[in-house]
Length: 137
Image (tube, rainbow, N blue to C red; front, side, top):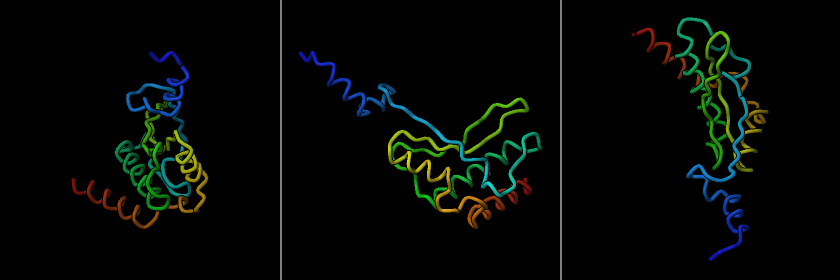
């Protein structure tokens, strides 16, 4: 019989039970924005806001990944729904729970590479295709 609680504590701290939602796994996230900080974005309260905002957030996530790479273990880019007095608005956040994912998150948040001010060419094309598809409906 193992009577050393230290072994269990070490296993929990090492994240061995995280996959089952057990343990002391700490996850933090940083707000990145709705779109590149120098670009216009969908405005809460306008027609089609939810569809347009989610499309912009997905395009922004794609742009981030093109320039900063895929998320490391413990990191996740996601679209967050934010309740507000005037409705729900959508933004991109980056979650982190490991040292590597924390470095990744803060590099994006501070835009170390200087590539998140405006839409890149791929995101621009992606958003234009979405506008064209909606006009065809």
